[in-house]
Image 1 (spheres, rainbow, N blue to C red):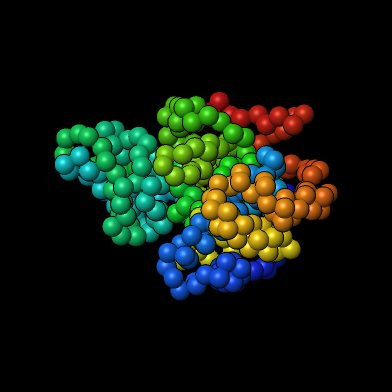
Image 2 (image 1 turned 45 degrees about the vertical axis):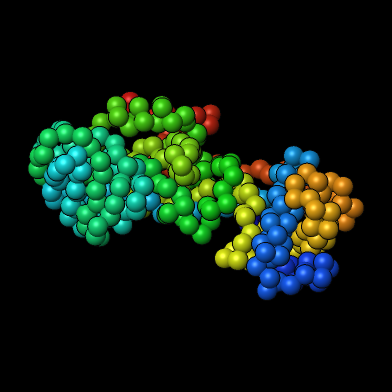
Length: 315
């Protein structure tokens, strides 16, 4: 699996200062600095989309840990808001997709999006219905909002390429409607190591796992990143172009855009320094990122015949 490119390079402040020097501008001038930041952003976007390439440095790898199932101590609905109290700290985050099952009243059972987390042992979600209280049952998180559970890695997510369990067992993609249908129809007790995932946007990136893990597992994601918008709050690692090309892409490319009063990322195809940098980048792409093979290892509790994993009827 491709490894993340983490070589040090220019800082945003250095790029801003060099562009200002070329133009005779002042980084302390708010209007000029805003234009410089926009030019840096556009230069980065131009590099990431140049001739439709997916560059080796746009491929990232990261992981998060799934949540344990939790026992429900009490569950109540009031004014169309359900409050769940768990027997122990749940660790859940807002916007996680949770499955409620096995309560003393089946009116609570289903799949919901967590709306708030008032404490370490409570969370809420919206559900229309009469006011009611019940006990028992379990909670299982089946969908993980990646900008929350894995904030350090997924803010610039463009597309998921691959999802694996424990860095070696590849999960298979399934469309969102089928994913929810499986969870709705599966037996209330079935959990285990995940076999499938769904990836979708609901105003944010998610990874949904089937079956619900029921325990703590590391889920690895190989994804393609996009270039972030550069502003005064951006961190230096937002400059994802490799260091050896950063001056030509960000500084000379950004300054060229501003000199010519252009801010379209496609305009940089007319900038000789930028085009030369992209040609050199194309010629220097590491071979190991072009061809990659890996042995997929399936867990012992899933029988494998001719690379086909046979699932139980409930799955």
